[in-house]
Length: 338
Image (cartoon, rainbow, N blue to C red; front, side, top):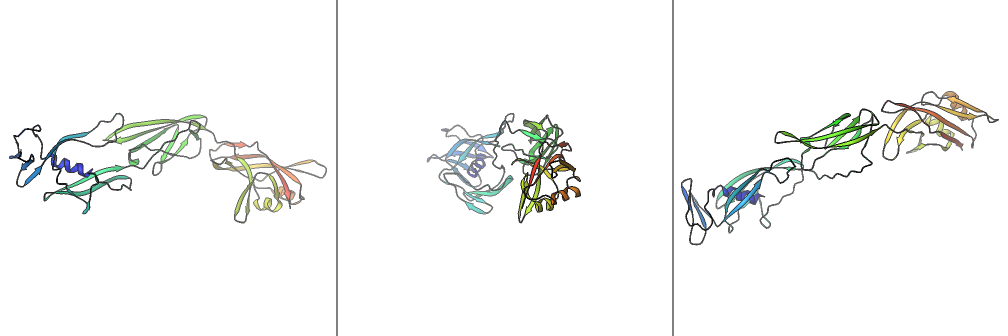
């Protein structure tokens, strides 16, 4: 890249050059350029600079072009000396070319710049070059996963390859979209059983250009599953029924609920529930809770149960972060163990 910049610098010395093969020179700032007996183009200015090749070059402003954009490029004739390579410095440190190319590691994203100088035939040409480094990006889309849940924060990632995150503009129809950092956004749809559309555009050359849009299906949160949270030493376990010690029941003291399907883990607030115990002759005795906690009457009933006895928890009422209260169909069978 820097070698190409050297060529561009020397191209300024070869403007209006005549076709190859002509032995007549042309004036440049009052000084002629000519080809001598060893077939070298020579520029006569205050100092003598020799060149032996004239090339046509194309210097684009960028190699990353989006549909609808314009290609901006310089098309020049360049005069070079192929027998004398320039000496190139980046930040006062000499760099060497490999097969005519200068390379350096780009390990920071965003707008970057390099400063240096090209030295050839005792002349120094300083330069500064700005460029944008983008993080690698990949988009994997599955038809059955374009779902957002209403009433909660849905994390999503927005990126356009070749465009800085600072130049991206994203909006959402059918809800709100909050920008975080590094391409992370939080989408919050307004209501379930609807559609939300996220539109992405980007700024370039002072203009806002469309990048695309994506449609999401919006669903209400699924019903949560009730459970009893138990602390067993450093371990935390969610009992959804089965054999449980009396101590775990009394220490937990309440019923919790959450959507916990391996992908979502969204807690719900339990408003109340009902337990059903059985007396000695098999009569069902329903008892109402005190909100999410076992009532005093329910705790006394649990203490009176012998190992192997069971009771049931049902009619759990829970409210999610979407503000919707629902009655859960799931019930729990609890068996007292020693």
